[in-house]
Image 1 (tube, rainbow, N blue to C red):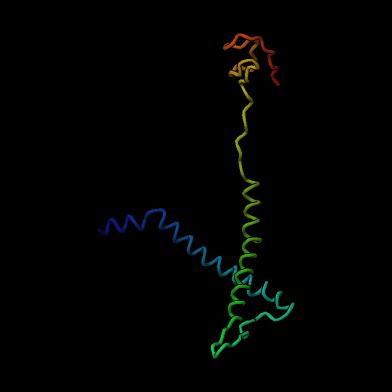
Image 2 (tube, rainbow, N blue to C red; image 1 turned 90 degrees about the horizontal axis):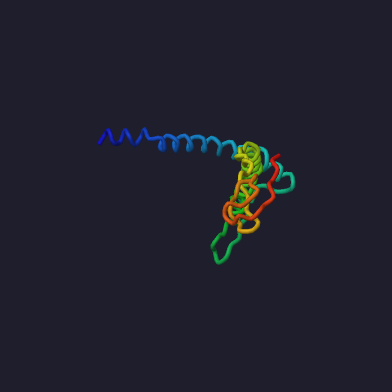
Length: 138
């Protein structure tokens, strides 16, 4: 059983997942800091940036909707930061580095009479024997 557990721990997927969790936590801290220390103060310039004190009461029940507003705004700001500072640049980078295979020059073409594939330089179709104009290379 111990050797099976050792194989499980040393599989590539487990190690990759562990690395992803550690990197994700570190990245989360960077995004959180960017939002709290850079973006949220910019919102504070426009007005109140802490809504946690907003409440209303109905029949003795207190609804603290300010905390929800804070959480919602935090989510929207974090999502915007991740989208504009991570996703968009990564998409642009991936688009620039994409290596699409070059298409080779065609070696065949369709016969105008029977639509069979014939060599590009053929003067007569091998299928229907009709005369075709040869295509000049280059």
